[in-house]
Length: 435
Image (cartoon, rainbow, N blue to C red; front, side):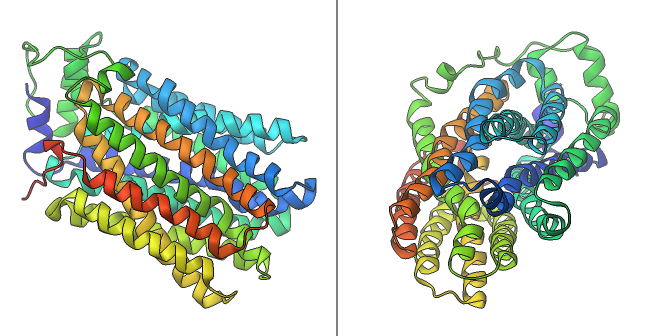
């Protein structure tokens, strides 16, 4: 049996569509969970009288948890399986979201957000591997982009929910809603989501043959009577394997590109609603600005995924990030005009988030099955260093009384460096596959 050939050849089956859809919905809920803190931040700051630096720490706590979860929990997925890790993380995230809605002090809030981040960091890498391993190579960039588009979709829905719930029920209700939606996905995963066929073939867990045949039945493919010799022995799933001589240069370039891109992305996602409110517009307009960024991100992510299958990931990521940096600078110098801020916010989401999510596809392609989640997890984890610094640095620059324009220029510069790093990755796995 050749698991790669089974997935790559022929039409996409109903099972493959189901796997991709389930993973996209789960990631959408993760986007809701992560960005809920950005939409509730103005209300929390008012209720608890938080200074900008304190609010920056709150915004960064979940991202710190995501970094640790991506680097130290996600690699376990390459040992226990993608399906098992997804179920564990759904439980952890749901309970941590409930705890977030019940906190009474800033320290409790920091802890609850950090635990939420641990689960989201681990599940995101697992979902990316699952989608990559159930999608034919010719459509892989697009489906990974669709998966990651679920994140800003969840953020967009979170903005609508926050705008409706907070005036009536307070900011805590936003987290209870997120917890309930996430825990409702657990039965669906248990009943419907199979383990990755490539993982089963490569890792050969207990009863591997029976499990493989169960998946083959659901794929509508012929059963196998025995498992032949592996083409290659599994590599150990740890960070050292990502830094072997033949991988080191591409891994380091990918890590740095992801980190610098994350710096800008999470500054935007965390601070745009508050910046718009501070410019003199009402809270509802601040939330809408965040919604427009996420809406632009959804469209930009899918556009890059579609086009990259024909034109290649690297040139598109390069172009998206260059254009995104220009949009950031423009946003920083716009007057407090609703139409202008919404339009440029949409463009920021389209290009900055589109280019950023393209790096997920790079990570999913350049690492083999046995270390794929480890590679994705460490890429996300290193990238989260930027996502942690971004919101906190934004708070520091506000406290230092930097005006809006120079702040956005400062966060546009890392995107230019990330664009150069991304285009310099040389892995042959990034050569586009055409139908």
